[in-house]
Image: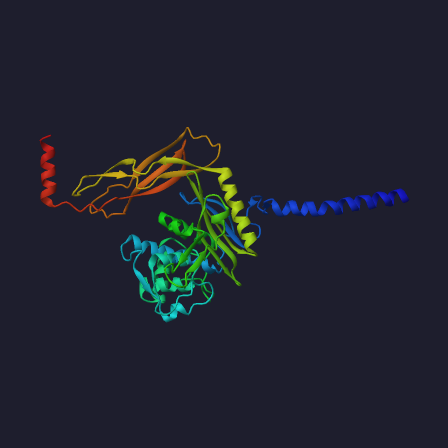
Length: 394
């Protein structure tokens, strides 16, 4: 009897000693979801991991849940700013005047004073690094005249991008009823922002100064610490409110592969950074981008009926690639250009005229829209007659 009791005590003590180690192993290792797939962000309420080039989703969890996005909202604000720069509506050295309303914003700010003027470039830094609520409103007023009109622009852009889980009420993410987004939609707008490659010049900075030549220079430190501590990380935006908890849309690039990781509702900054890092590690370890067509490479020719030009040369304006698991055979991967039937003038610049389809054997791996690189006007009757007559004498 004594021997049995002693044996039982020994077993209990052994299990007790092993429990902390087991718990630690569970905390560090990626957990398994009920679906059997790996859970790369176990502490997040919602998350997604996306390839930036192709938009392929590598991993997701509750990615369409509508949640408060906090300052990740500013990704859309930055997107509209970058578009305005590309369209020539504003320049980096344009001055932005701070209204009384913009200066009144609480939370994260760069402490703009009413009437203070700051360049567009410095405002971008204030938004990207310091998450300035005041800078976001000042830029909104600069671009649209009023904050409400800018919010209308934000929602219109969200609709254009197919962000069905999103509604914006302000340009900075301060808590307000009816302001929400999802991890999926945040990844979509992050991907769109990254098409403006110059944005990482700002989002990838760890620190900088505003008002450098003044008596009160303001030190900026990026709220996204991964840009300093994770190799390849160069953006994008953090967020926190007591309602939203800790959120992050982050991007990193290694070799020719760029990924976007979004987490929402993390309990601490440590969880947020660790789980995004884990998502990055998984993507770079498991996947690769396989090039299909390089930027500037010819794709093919399109015949345009009754156009001022009868043929349109199609050149890749960006590189096309597909996301593959490392080790996937690539010998039988091919691509074909499939144009829409009966392309007739007029053709508008940017109009979809066909698809670039990528196959592996007979299986379709990816389809890319092909857009007209320029406008083709309808040919005049005399032009068509001359073309027909010319054909008779060939």
